[in-house]
Image (cartoon, rainbow, N blue to C red):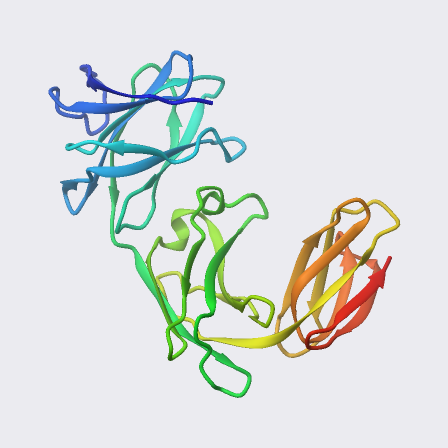
Length: 290
């Protein structure tokens, strides 16, 4: 896949939605040699967004056709040419200092007009990370992760919507420019970790941002082998918290490197017929074979 950046003047489109000004000079990104294209205009607070990235996704599979392609344009105008092989697409818009925006169900055709896509500041998720004794954890990595509500692939995960920051000396963190959950139809969680030492259980992210405090616990490792076909190993805590860890099986082996201490039920491909109970201790490697 290749792309090029050139200048073009938007053609007249009598049936365009929120049509662009005739003299608007767009920045064009070329995906390939197809005949189809889409054109759009990105604003924030009614003003053009002059620096942005546009990623194209196949609507039927939510698979990306491209990475975020850089656009620099004084009018916030972009045109994506050379699209082929799809009828409908979703576009994800990223710009500095803004939450991601999305345009869904775009009928891909010759000079298809997306119209105006508005982005905004989004929301803030913030909180503190403390250890089990209540002391602040400085320098912890805090990350927001996404799972699709319907079990499919979440659009924000595919669009690199995962956001990351680190705690300060008081254990506090602030994650800005978070898009509302309904924008991408995903269930999102926050989790903190200190590599090789501590990990928190995933905590849900409020739909409109807010406070999410996390408790980082010591960790151990679970590893072993699987003697029958299987792709995923999942470990679920039997304690009062909903701690879990998931890893992939490669050549009959698996490794879960950051599991909070506690007792877990572990199974392959979530088939409880093969489930076993293990105890994870701080700094220890627990071996289990299926």
